[in-house]
Amino acid sequence: MAVTKPEAIVVGAGPGGLAAATALHRKGWSVVVLERSATLEPIGAAIAIAPNGLRALDTIDAGTPLRALAAIRGAATLRRPDGRVLAPTSGEAFTARFGEPMVLAARAELMRVLLAGLPADALRTGTTVLTVTPGDADRRATVTTADETLTADLVVAADGIRSPIRRVVFPEHPGPRYAGFTTWRAIVPAVAITPGETWGRGLVFGAMPLADGRGYWYATANRPAGTTHGDERAELLRLYRDFHAPVGDLIAAAPAGRILRLDVHEMATPLPAHHRGRVVLIGDAAHAMTPNLGQGGNQALEDAIELADVLSGVTAAGVVDALPGYSRRRVARTSAVVRKSRRIGAMAQWHGRGAVAARDTLLRVAGRVAPDAALRPLDSVLAWRPPTGAAASTRTEV
Image (cartoon, rainbow, N blue to C red; front, side, top):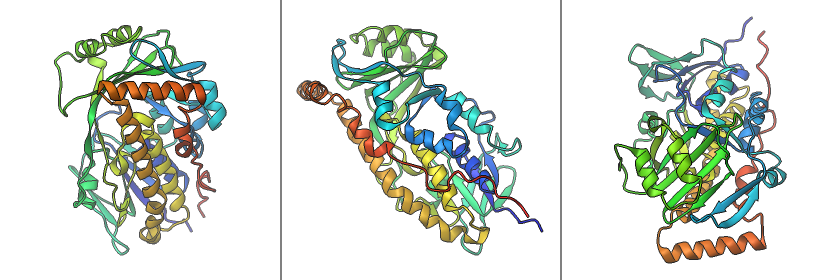
């Protein structure tokens, strides 16, 4: 007799949603992914995959192809706008400390690898979810789109920082707040890049190489939310005009229409849980954070693997009883990462002349006394390991 598979609907086809869908599929679930965009054009120029993210991907056989993209080798530095070094580190030192490299991948490449782990008919694009009913122990969850109403034993809300599903299941929560700064990102043609960041007065500029020879850069600046310019590249050239070479050249090399701008928001007030009924939240929908630790996507990958592990061997009837275990695993950890990222971000965005001078002095001294000082804040963040049994393959049907 065939065993009926439990059914899951994943809302959102970003890295977290696709990883969750793949992990559940490998645990024997029937999975459908609903994505409102008509096509999976990659939103976001590149994504940093840290050791914890690589370990998560390993459980769904997606880590190895991405390790081949590791391109951050040799010296990496934190600098002042005039080019003087504040703190040195290196790709080799990072790998030696954490056991894995930091992989910077074009987002399109990560999406390609994740999609390869799903059945061809699992993804439905051009599908906007209008509302969700969480269900309970006796009723399946309901997902209503513009075209139909679906039911499932589990709904995974991977629908981003402005998650409509979060607003439905936690209507009392204030949601994310503006972190006080804006980011810009771009991928540029082949250039020679020394990996690192430059911290100025309320300004940060970082650049990293990609494995295919292209370069990726990102910039942040303090400003009121919603501040835009008709020509964002021209505005960036103005903001960073006094930064050392090749900052200006990197900005100028980005096609004007391919510079991505985003006001940064964070979940300053943690959710009381990451589930309600048969609905579970992952990634930015649950714990949006500033980009300063590069952990937004990596925490979403952790979420996906932890969720699949919690639900491993669980029948459709047992989902509601199992999901509190997911919240116990994830709420405290992700809240701590949000706070740590906020603290690092606050220091990077200091603007006052005296505060910046004191910060730079502290960083220079720490870099001389303890060369690995820049890596220490990452110890607890990158220490995550997949739960035992997380890599179990799809169950055999009988």
